[in-house]
Figure 1 (spheres, rainbow, N blue to C red):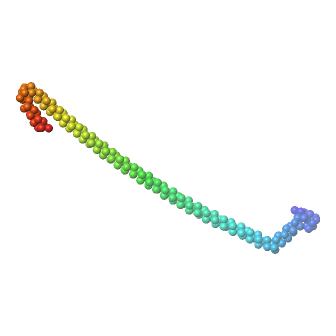
Figure 2 (figure 1 turned 90 degrees about the horizontal axis):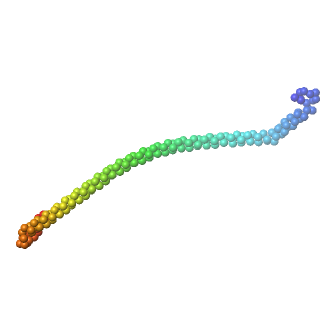
Figure 3 (figure 1 turned 45 degrees about the vertical axis):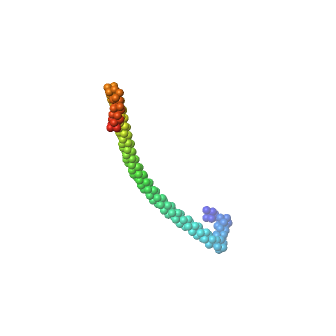
Length: 169
């Protein structure tokens, strides 16, 4: 350094005077209250940092609470969705079973109706065949009797045919 190295006295050195001026300036600033202002500014800054830290801690706690709540809701929603799917599956199975049962009943009813219809048609056909057979038999008998009986037998034949129709039907 220059203070120690030279032959010149230390007061001739400009660094010495800059140091003295700085010390006077700092002393004057401290005497005028700059120290309290600096300390107050530092305290205010520390308080602001503490406040920011506590706010950050509070926000972190809120975020954690929200995360926990959303996890709970997610788990609850998952359970509810599983329950809904299970319920829907049961309802679908019940509906399918009921539909099968209804279809089976419907097929049985239609089969029974068709069988009844066939039986009626068969009975009608048998009755028609009988009626036609009776008419043909009566016509044949009338024709044979008319051929063998002659004119006097016509009135007798007509009366017999009328009696025969009443007895057969």
